[in-house]
Image (cartoon, rainbow, N blue to C red; front, side, top):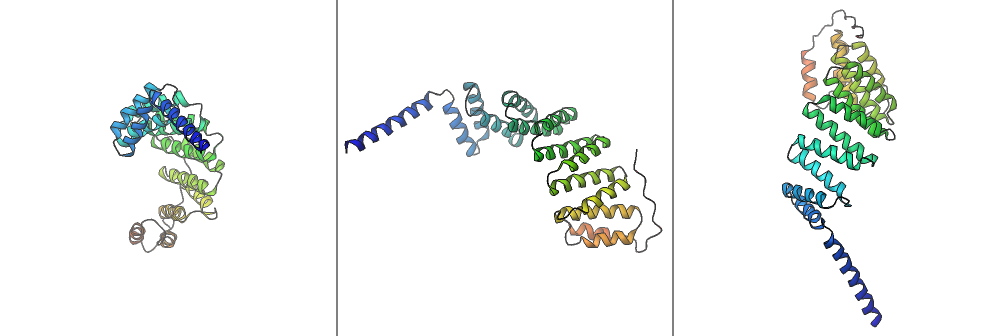
Length: 274
């Protein structure tokens, strides 16, 4: 009996020490209150508590959590992208030794800069992402896709092609490879490089077991090329083959209804732009 009492007293004493340790931590209340407020949707209140925690605990074990929550609140809740830039850059400076966390932070920062229209800073961020993603094929793939879209938005199609070709070559799975090739074919079509677009789509459609949606989107884009070539029979054949798999059936039906019944002599495809 005495042994049981002694064990109970020991457990109570350890619990009391743990409680005292928590209470003695300067930011203990702030982090707990921040979590509670965040879970209840009181985001502005949580934001203040996370900020207080960072100020009170310069070496605190929950700093990463606090930084991430503050970034999330700024981007998704408040839409304050300028503040998000400051937060993300501070996060990177403090916690950049963690490669996974550093990549995630830079990737977010690239997206925020892109939304702000600061494309040079966005590209700088994604270039850092590529270096941080050297050992992660998935991170490399995601970074290259976003970089290519950014290059496309500023009309740098040579860099678009280079980035997406690298993306397709280094992809570790067929799904990633197919996405890179589709983006590449789409980019070629935007600038009228029909030969390059068709060549890329043919390589894409030769990949076994690509997703049904990717196959349908690729065939739809191939139909654009044949329609430009005025081969309406082949265009119709391609469109009819994806009536049941293209994401929006009405779009395909509308294209089919607008096609001429008889194909004239096809035009030669334009050579790729230099």
